[in-house]
Picture 1 (cartoon, rainbow, N blue to C red):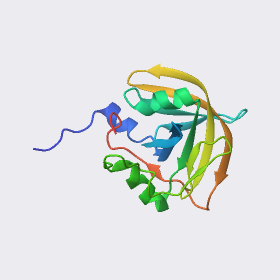
Picture 2: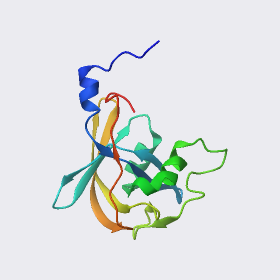
Picture 3: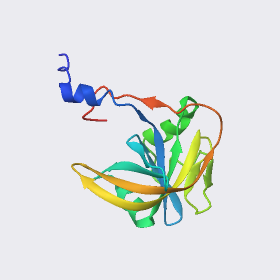
Length: 160
């Protein structure tokens, strides 16, 4: 049985490109993170971006409580980073176990094999539907190598 065609809204939303990122913070001194794609720069002065979190994702409350998060920008060479956050982890294991993890000056964890990273200080939150958006000022950043970010299109703009 074939899948029904996506609705016009779903198909149109799926054509909006996004990048792929690992969003990180610390809990009890240890790095945590997830693969995210709903990220957008929303201001120049101060440099500001926003990241959308599913309301049921525990990282939302942890990033809010910490007041900071890191954003590691993925590119075509970052497949291992992406895979680390997509696979199920064994009991007691972390996706960070086999990755090169550094820290921004603030202590926010960042991935050293990413294309670039940004350290962000949370400045606001807006809940909408099934997601919450955290707004954050970019405090520090680094380009780790030359290249272009991974661009992602979803077939269905109403789901991951």
